[in-house]
Amino acid sequence: MHSRKWTDAAWNAATPVFDKITAHPFITEMMDGTLPMDKFLYYIRQDSLYMKHYSEVMSFMADRIPEPEISSLFRKLAEDNIEAEKEMHKFFVSPGTDSAGSEMLSDEKMSPTCLFLVSHLRMQAASPSLEVAMASVLPCFLVYQRTGEHIFRGCRREGNPYMKWIETYAADEFDTSVSALMSICDNMAASCPGQADAMTEAFVMGTKMEWMFWDAAYRMEKWKI
Image (tube, rainbow, N blue to C red; front, side, top):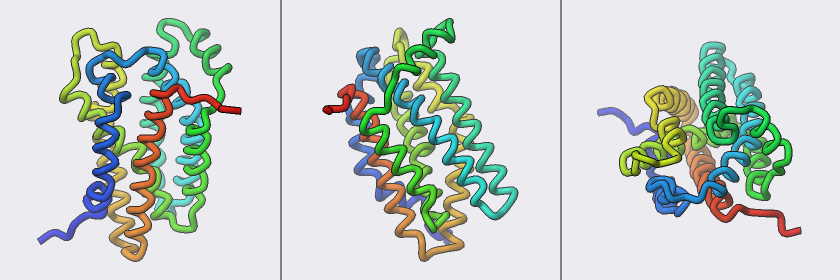
């Protein structure tokens, strides 16, 4: 009989949050193609700002992993994910021209939620527990993959302006990257069982923050002062 993997328990704990993600109007309207484009572009621009910090954090965490093979694998997974997102961002922010997207991003400031997520990400990456740090970044992969799969299964495909985004996160290549990162986290949890609960707490918190990011985009959140 196989012992239960940590990622199974972590996903079970985060499922109520994931259910709220898939029920959020940002996601449901993306599925049927009715999400207002200004809300989606707000999201893409904020995501681009977030990814600059995410890239630095993932590089920092790769340096923390003591096993060279796992460190190299983690770095490659992060780089592949970042490149896929950059290509998708270009498709929406700057269709056919680089200058338009550059101007839009140069004028963009982090929303309160984006700043909060970046600050939390950096704090977790510096956690004394590498296991907890790894669990905190897993939602960036796993939640997006499962959200992409959920949307892909039920979305309106013909004439849907968001198919590029949907296909990016439902792609087999992304699924492979997510599975590899899940395996790394499972092995860490198995080798350090005393950290499993803290890892799960970090994973659930990261999942909540994914909901917050989409919610802020739907509201096109602004600074109040």
